[in-house]
Image (cartoon, rainbow, N blue to C red; front, side, top):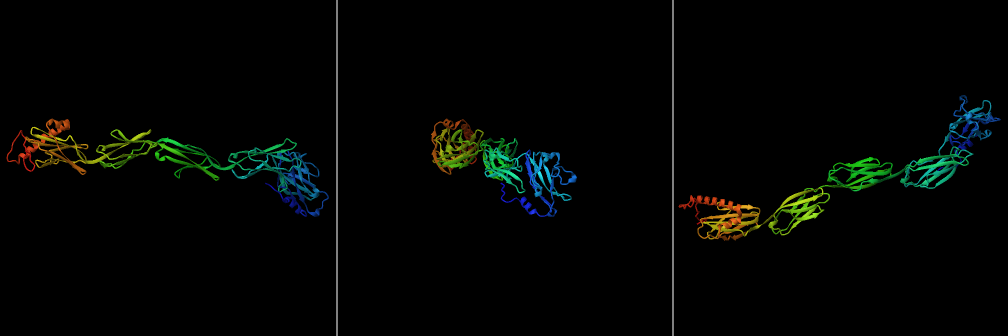
Length: 561
């Protein structure tokens, strides 16, 4: 805003100059609209002792030296001027009062330039003043915008036009201001060098939407068709706002992903992609993409885009969810347990989406959870039948993985009811079937003979283990009399069990119990053992009784009779 509350410097200088030497005072520059007029204020002085009867003067264009024959703008002696100024120039001031003010009318672009005044007091008393005024012929109002316009901060924009034509006064109108505010017209104001301007002000608080707005000012002259317009585009500074961003993204492991962040700001922002505080990519631009090649589950997470400039910042996040098949399950827990105790086994995995977890034993599902990453298998009072191989299977729509594990149930021996003895043709075979874990030691006892035989004496006992079952066979040769009582005792670290084995009348019953394969093995071993025992004992006997190539063993304390 321009306010003049004191006497202009130009006129102060004029008042102080009177009294004694050659000098001139005029505005160094002055402007006017094409087609209008302009009054160039001018004062001059000369030594008092000259006392001329008549004072004349000449205005020259673009040169102060008459020898260069510059165009004559005005000449008081002859009124002869250059053709460019004919009918366009006249003196407003009174040279006798040392006022050399010049009026130029019907201005055109070629009249723009430097104007010099020469005082003529007669004879040799002529002086061309070096002071001059530069005339600028304009066609547009001057819109003055502050160096920085910030959104949210009130701003003042002015429209200034020259008002140096006494015959035509400009009238100012703002164009395109409706959304901004109402103007304030200050009117005609004098500048420091004695020139005049018309000023209109526009006050408003700009928004980011006003950036790039085209604001105009029009100067019109009453009773003429002359109108002059000037425009300025508002450069409104404002902080970034993120306007473009991916929503949550789902991607299959191994695929390509592009995350895009776009921001609106002035000036352009520094865009930064970050994850867990680490900068992944940044650039000064309106948009920035982050390319992820062959994504892995480790890239799953929250990504942040930060936009910032000197006026503020904004940030937004996007969650990337990488879909993948379950990892190989991990099984934790006690894998060896004593019968009757409880056991807890935890199966865990990782996948996206969450998997279906199932624990199987022999293709039978024991426990299942849906869309969870861990499964707890609880077995209370485990039984020997719970011993065996288990599988933890994890699956979702992207794949399946499984882990096998073994549960070992330890328990005291149990002698099964199929255990028995059978005799045929002077031979007794006793079958003791024991279920236990760990493997038991088995001993056969003949109380009436005070004899105990265990599996370490392989010439009499044959043992075979199948899973949790241990089958031991005792063979007695040379039993022509009634079969003796036979006790089977099985023992491990958890306990012992004894059973008197019942006798069955037919030899074939034993084979039926142990099955075809066991019968063949038992029979073969039986024959081998009988022969081995007979031949071994023959060497130490004083008398022998050969029976079909095999010998019965007699002796004490272990004797067969």
